[in-house]
Amino acid sequence: MKILVTGGTGYIGSNTVVLLLKAGYEVVICDNLYNSQIEVVDKIKKVTGKEVAFYKTDILDREGLDKIFNEHKIDAVIHFAGLKAVGESVAKPLFYYHNNIEGTLALCEVMAAHGCKSIVFSSSATVYGKPESVPIREDFPLSTTNPYGSTKLMIEQILQDLYVSDNEWNITILRYFNPIGADETGTFGENPNGIPNNLMPYIVKVANKELPHLNVFGNDYDTVDGTGVRDYIHVVDLANGHLKALDKLNGVNIYNLGTGNGYSVLQLVKAFEEQNGIEVPYVIAPRRPGDIAECYADPAKAYNELGWKAERDVVDMVKSAWNFCVKNFK
Ligand code: NAD
Ligand code: UFG
Image 1 (tube, protein in one colour):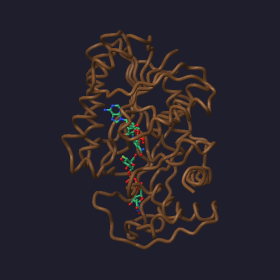
Image 2: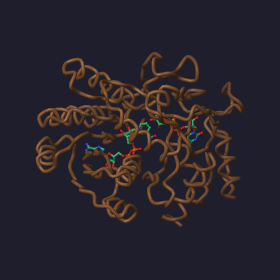
Image 3: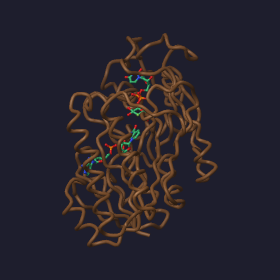
Image 4: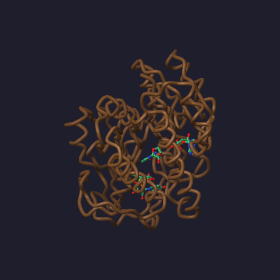
């Protein structure tokens, strides 16, 4: 089978492409390199010993997409391409709606024109807004608190409408919780430009002495130690969920991809310090606007229907995140 991976040079995309190639799939990557580097393609080839076709194409470019589908018989698409920074989406909503929504519309139109009607889409736990309880099941109420989240929720709706209009589509929507860590070779990790928004890349930059200390956003939540609790999931487990989803594409389905376990900010910091033997200085800062106290998945549906569950623990997550830094930035 030949899979088109949009956003395939990005953080989750590159980890997924590696697993696809190792599992014997043929892979075509389409990425405009807005948030990733061309070097990733060679790294994928080196780690897997396999060939991968790469197109520096924007998913908004219908002609560019058409060319890919003319040159390859694509069986299914895994659609990672998108912008993902919550704060930036508040400042630049039109940029986010344009890129994420228009891009997905263009992609689906070109897919349909070429008779390719199978897609796995990257959604997010952000579509649960402020959940009334945890663990979060797929049938919980949906809402969003920022334009980024709204693009995910709107795309989910668009894809479901598409299925209603044409039952030949097979659509799997995966709602990721908090992916962290890197592959075992330390090649495919997360290295955002500038000051990171997310916790794990921030911890790594503090550990690497690029930033003086971590700001812990609030220690007065109703949680185990007062700091925010999230469902951190190893990026390789998450990537593996896409292979399971591909296997079972059938109609329209939605799955949480999380571990089902919550870790607080301070628990993650402690695990990182203990496992890597490095101190991570922190100060308690005010709550970050829009944050919720606790967010973790009920991952039972993915286990029951896809046969997928997360296998790597928090030790693997914090060690691999640091290993990626050591291999690439020290
Ligand atoms: P990433 O930024 O590393 O990867 C996304 C890739 O898409 C980048 O390589 C970027 O260059 C590319 N891209 C963006 N717009 C494009 C366009 N118009 N045309 C072609 N390529 C384009 O992000 P990631 O962390 O790997 O996330 C992948 C997907 O998963 C995104 O859709 C993101 O919203 C979603 N997601 C991520 C997280 C997370 O915490 N990382 C959580 C939930 C959902
Ligand atoms: N945090 C800090 N200091 C920091 C960064 C984060 O204390 O410098 C805390 C946050 O307050 C929160 C926890 O660490 O309690 C996790 O924060 P992240 O920013 O890493 O992750 P979020 O859960 O806020 O959001 C992320 C993505 C969203 C996505 C969501 C679920 O940014 O887009 O995971 O997948 F929707």
